[in-house]
Length: 152
Image (cartoon, rainbow, N blue to C red; front, top):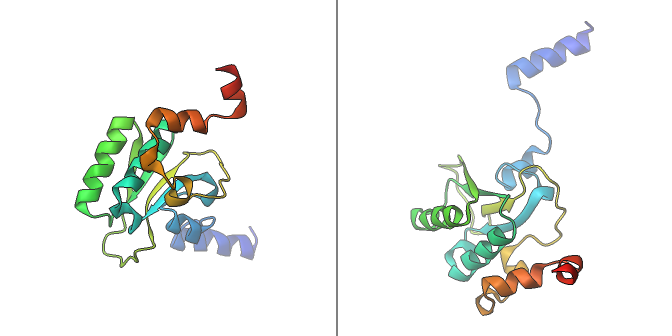
């Protein structure tokens, strides 16, 4: 074993295996940006219309996962748990207790478990500007692709 390989092995043993895109994973609550379908900040979490928009996203993508920050207030956390359970969505929490967060930090990330989505727009308010005007069925019909509309 060469000296470089030995040093790398020692560093991995002492500091752990290096993570790929660690800052990105921290920002998106443990997942990569390309897997994200929708996000809510702490400020957006206060608006009930944004929770309705999240519910619509959950209905459209039942196999995705909901990642919730450990700093989410208890009342919002309860609403997210109920919402996830109603939709049958797996929910995970990130241990970020004690950190100081800003209102624009991400509180909730709705993402694919292991598939890259490459969504350009992931902010829930940009994805659903008028969620209160649509019913769940109207949204799902609007969200269908051209081929799904053609053959359904």
